[in-house]
Amino acid sequence: MVVGRVLAAPLLTFNSGTRRSVLDRDLAAATALSPLSLTKCHTRCKSWTIRSSTADPQTLPLTDEERSTWDSCREVLSAFDFDTQEKDKMLGKAFGHVPSPYWGEERKQEVPRFEVVHGILEYLRSLGLSDDDILKVLKKFPEVMGCSLEDDLKKNVGILEKVWAIKGKSLKNLLLRNPKVLGYNVDCKGDCIAQCTRCWVRF
Image 1 (cartoon, rainbow, N blue to C red):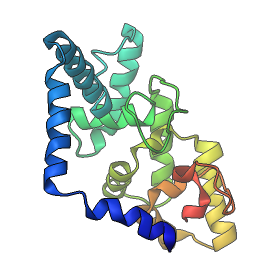
Image 2 (spheres, rainbow, N blue to C red):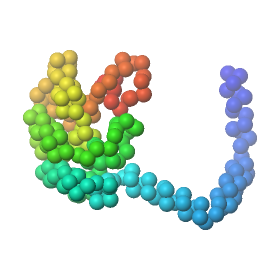
Image 3 (cartoon, rainbow, N blue to C red):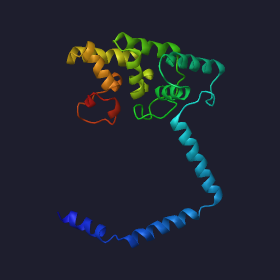
Image 4 (cartoon, helix red, strand yellow):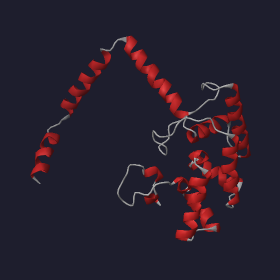
């Protein structure tokens, strides 16, 4: 309680005049930057924003063969109602070209491969998901296309069926509600290991 009272006192005396002086000081520091510094900062921020929001294979350092592979993955996604930019963003998130909380810093950039993306989508169809269902899954969890079919998707569906007896229509409803369960690959059992986006504790 003593600590609370000590900390509260400065907050109560922090009036609008103090806030204004702090803001004025920060503004003065910002305007003291040279135009060149501001330009460099703006350029870095702008380029980061572009990289973080989409992935355009035409601007990535890809070979002609790799761009062709990317285009083939776009074609696989043509069964769904996505425009080209949406397809690129989803593929970028799945294969490390667009930052994603799911992967964190661990995902290495890869060129999406037709057989991988096609295999994932066909497996989802085998679980009873229609193309409309898969569209919803991809919107919520595009990273699923970059997960391992054997080590993540099939393994997790097996766990859901054996441990929780979730199968058939119940499994379909679960995947529509929380498709990220397909990518869970760690279980901290309550002792956090800072991989919460991929942990079974969230289930």
